[in-house]
Length: 123
Image (cartoon, rainbow, N blue to C red; front, side):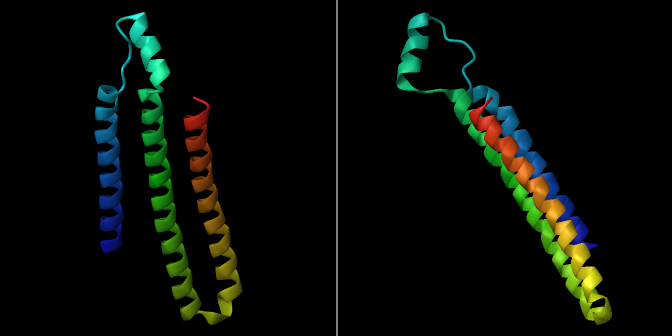
């Protein structure tokens, strides 16, 4: 029960951080310049606030995915170790199921990484 409360608290904190960054992101992005001279000056300086917003969004998304993936993998390995300790004769089946579960978790984290890279470089 303690683990469930800690996990729920972690997810709530991640969503609160996401909401905070989402609320402050529009304040950091300049949507329109008043004159063409300002647009040209900003292009020469290389100061693109949209790129910074993309980087922050990508960092938050991969951070959440990696953190929750690590939490899931840790739980998986811990519970499989408990299962092997209780029933050593079922070690092969438990280990196979554990590795398959970890592969699926890692795949989800890698998809989040690919999406984050696409957000930075393509969008």
